[in-house]
Length: 308
Image (tube, rainbow, N blue to C red):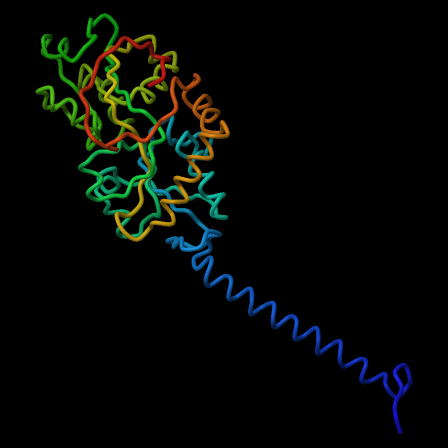
């Protein structure tokens, strides 16, 4: 007997077919999702080819505190570098996680090679020496350094420091150290900017040399600006960059450059700069013809609120 659609005898068959069809569609969807995940996001990143240390996280090596680039405020990590790295994390579809570590391990590439982190963001200057161990992004900040001395000391330049035979302090492993040494100094070195400032305040050293934005942040505190003053501002011609492993992270580096380019183009970079530096940028960072090459520094008379 022929069973016509809609008859009572056909009801069991009608009930089975939708269930099998739904099950088949579900299996297909799972297979497709699995395939997409394995090819496009092997470690939880939305960008194909990006291999993250921890799925779902962009681990960022830095050296705290280094305000205004990265520091802790009200229990939260904030700063110019932190904000830019948040943009990169968003592009990757993950969240940022800071890893506080010695700067030596960052600039030498040890932390990245050991997979302690995916990227280094530490207000780090691009230099030829560091490029031997790291792959740098396009520049995102123009470097300037400055002297800080007690009011009444009469120190405006490094020549004044030398003539008055005053002790000089710098942060270890930085371009400030390199610059001081190039001028004939053997300065006392401190592990981070916080310890360097404490050395000045406690009288361990009479003068310190540090990146201008860091000094500007210090000078916003009334107790410091009442006792100390900014000396010479030295424009080095160098630039800051973010860094990844020398080899093995091309897609991550490409993503960082894309995010920086977009942030500069749409005004996000300038807005973040103004927020963290306290004034509008004087210029947009551009990739140098020979990125990371040294250039002859010049001295100027920028005010504590001037931008590098």
